[in-house]
Each structure stands twice: as C-alpha cells, then as structure tokens.
Length: 368
Image 1 (cartoon, rainbow, N blue to C red):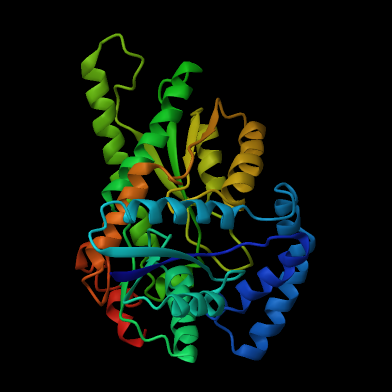
Image 2: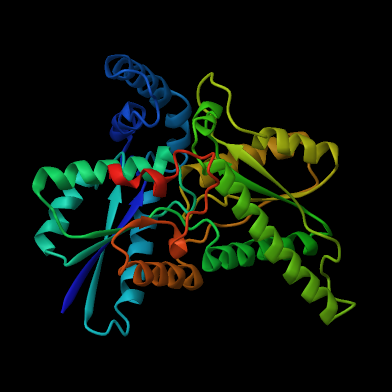
C-alpha cells in the first residue's frame, strides 16, 4: 500500500500563559518577518515579545484563557481531512500531520514523526489560501531545513496557494450568506461586507510578495458568488426578504504591529467609513481558515466595541471555513490532484501571480 503524508502548515499559538512570550519571540525572530541582521533581530524580537506579552498580546490571549485555540482547531481540520482522504483511497493510506511555525508541534518534531512513518510521498498543504513570504514561504523553509538535518528524502509535492479554490469560495459565501440573513431579520436590508485579511508592511508587498494581490482576488471572487446567490434568490420570490441590489463590499486589513506603513485600508478606516455611510457591516476574515485570536478577539471583541462606539447600525462577523465538509472535500481534492506533481505549484499547476511579483513561490521554488 502506498503511504502519503500530508503536512498541514499553520502559524501556531501559545498553549499557556508562560508560552506567550517565547511564541512571540519565535515569531519576531523569523527573518521573513523582521529582515534585520540576526543580532539586531534578536534584540528586537526580545524587546517586542516582552512588551507585547505584557500588554497587547497578553490581553488578547487572556480573553481566551491565556492560550490560543489554533492548534485544536487545526487538528480538527487535520482529522476531518484524513478521514475524507482515506474514504475510497484505492490502495493508498493517507496520514495528515499538523506542523506549526512558531509553537509546538514545530517542524523538527513533525519531521521526525513523518520520517518514522516512512511515507512514499509527501504533500505540503498550507492552511493559508493566499501565499506570502511571511507565512507559507517561512513554513516551507523551516520544513526543508528540518528535513535536510534528519535526511528525510521522500519526494514532495507543494501546494503554494489556492486563493480561488472553489470549495473555499463556496464555503465562504455560505457563511457570509448566513450573516446576511441574520442582518435582514434585524432590519438591515443592505449590509456592507468587509473582507478582512491580516495586514503586511508595504515594503514586503513592494518587494514582490503577491499576498495583497491574491487577497484582493479572493475577495472579488467571493463577492461575485454572493451576487449570483442574491440575484438567484431575488428571482425565486418577490416577497422573499433578500437583497436585490449589487453586493456592497470592500477589502481591508487588520492586526497592524509596529511603526512601518502597512497596506490598507485598515479595518479601522473601513469601519469609520461605514459609520459615515450609516451602513451595517458583516466582517469576513477571508485569509483565515480557522478561528484564533485575530478572529475571536480582534474581530469579535475589539472591533465589535469600536463599531458600537462609532454608532454603526449593525456589526456581524461571519465564521471561517473551519471543518465545513465542502472546504475539507476541496482540500482533499487538492491533495489528491497534487500527489502526482512532485513540484511546487499553485492550484491547477499554473502560476497565478503577475510577473511583477518576484517573490511568487512557483518562481522561487528551486531554493526549496
């Protein structure tokens, strides 16, 4: 029987109050996050991790019991994916491994587990639909370094991005639609959809990172699906409580850290604009695939409070794709489709990044 290991990459998060500071230190020590020389990066990472663990990050994780739910939520996706892959597997055994970048289980540990299982092939699957050097690239680098150290030589296929994956888009549209219906029941006929992604410093995008481009494409594709659904529903019944006008939406970015200029508009700016326009909003984190501190605290608590203070008519947040069967089936299809492609490529095997994005993973994959 052929054995295929699937590596699910994610950011990771602290599992206790004592691990908040070392988690943050690992994060800011990544040269993909802070590009300064190692000695300077060390002192910056030390300073930021101490400061943020006592203040912003410490406060956020306190809301969640001093730990992140990211590992548990990622493991739920892992279990669902493994079950789906092994249904009608036709002589193939799939085993899915969770690999976190900045807190346990990290690459050195997971590489040892994979090596012990002795797979015939490895499929690397980031839980980041949109590629960035700060997320997917960093995870792949970490894996390669750990795999080289222990001599894990099984052939690898890498799915670098799937920002327009049909299952991801469809699940996203369904979850937003649920909130549209809730808003309508509350008397809001035309809420504005805010697609919120984790931000990046402008210099990273200007350096050729395609993340912003892919986030914008994802948002446009989901909005297109919502327009089709809303139009279809409107035709079914003239008395149906549905939207009849085009979807009102915009993209924005959250989680800014530090003094650098970040890509925008920020979610704060988007909320202020909605308040000026007297528009209720539905926030959807379209660059996240499971719930964690940025959704459960930033969006559900901090920005909900801001929306209330600004006087928005309504504030709703659509849930992430999580373990929705449509999304999990889409991931399983990605794995099976890419198993026979021992290369690094986007969904479908074609490069989706315009040439100006020189940090495209497919173009730079030879270094991995």
